Length: 347
Ligand code: NCD
Ligand code: ZN
Image 1 (cartoon, rainbow, N blue to C red):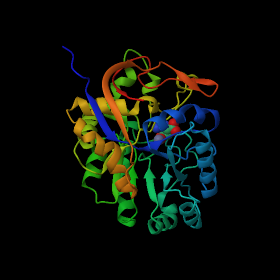
Image 2 (cartoon, rainbow, N blue to C red; image 1 turned 120 degrees about the horizontal axis):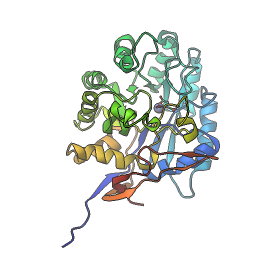
Image 3 (cartoon, helix red, strand yellow; image 1 turned 45 degrees about the horizontal axis):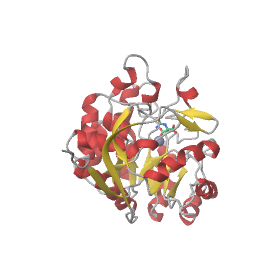
């Protein structure tokens, strides 16, 4: 006797935190996201970063031009906030259709050298964003070398988030890719102007994954994976039914030669199998019924956008993720590449 495979139908989801890169590299990875998601928030940490409305508009055109024939995927553009982002740029950003600015503390992660050295230097600009309804997306880690790498997110809450929320109460802030129980608790108890994204790797893995039988560069991202107690807190937040938590893969492709190097770039590439990985995480705690709101409803609600109209279907069936895919002239290894996944997005 055979039973029909389990299928899960979802309103077409969005990815609220994505790195697409540019040029041939972007051309290689964009189709994976366009297949899984209706829209994505595109991170501005190119080299040089996207700091102006004009650059964001031009980047969007390059993305649209690189989309596969017939795709209606929509990139949602962001600007990279610097100490010197002019107040006037905010109006131009809004007119150009950008939806948010990204705060990288200077030196916190990949391509963040141009980041903010002291958030108070940006207050006039943040006030303009609050007025214009642009969101602030935050990489929430302090860069103080005295602070242990594993504590940088928790310290960021005290040193930056709390004062920021006090001084800019009606600015919508997304605490991006949160990784700790402290951040999950902070966001859960914050008011309606604060939300958070969660990556698949932080829901599925703790920091042991980086050291399984040897150093595993493809599990290294920033903020770095944390202890199991944190993973469990994040999974509880994602599946709690709270509308403050939503999907943001932080898929961050780096060529294999850069990952498997004496200095390994931070970032996990998950665009190829993002929904499958989230389904695995939600299923592990019997919460598949919470996946649609997390993936497809909470993000647009917080950003003030409508939900997508289409649907996607996940089927519970084993398949093997490719070990490596093309990345411009180079190769790119997906997280879990070469391994079996238990869910598959239907074409
Ligand atoms: C991102 C990247 O590679 O651009 N890396 C990462 O580990 N997440 C940068 C970032 O979002 O921190
Ligand atoms: Zn990121």
